[in-house]
Structures are given as structure tokens and as C-alpha cells.
Amino acid sequence: MTSSSSDLDPKIRFVVLYQDAQMKSTRIRKILNVPLRTIQAWIQKIENVDILNPQRNNFSKQVDEETKMNIETEMKTSSRV
Image (cartoon, rainbow, N blue to C red; front, side, top):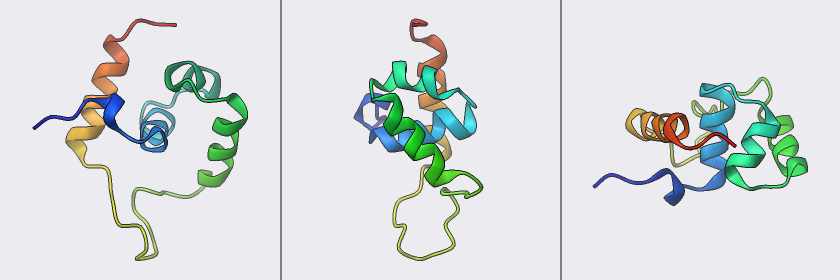
């Protein structure tokens, strides 16, 4: 079963767009339809931290490579806003 990127939590999509696709906050805001201030707050929380490889054991769910690729592919093929 393949999941669509729209089925994913907005924070997971944010991480992929920000860290892997290296998009700017204004572009991410348009794609996710989340307030810019929220995006900026998320950026502050993850700066200099690799949240996909946590140091603590309380992070139970990691993004697998297939999901990352699906999100990146969908973002590249979706209409540019």
C-alpha cells in the first residue's frame, strides 16, 4: 500500500521539504497551507538537530526512504504556486 503525501502529518512533510528538498519557508507555507509563523517556529526547533536520527528513545516513528521519495516526487510534479 502506497501512501499519498497528503495522508502524512504536516510536520513530516515539512521536514522533508525543509531538510531534504531544501525549500524556503515561504514556499513550504504555500505547499502545506500552514501559517508562515508556524513554519518559522518549526524551523527554529529543528535547526542544528537531525530529527530523523533522534538521540533520545522517545521518538518512535521515523520517515522511511520510500515515503521521502514519494513526497519529493509529488512536490516536483505538483503545480508550482
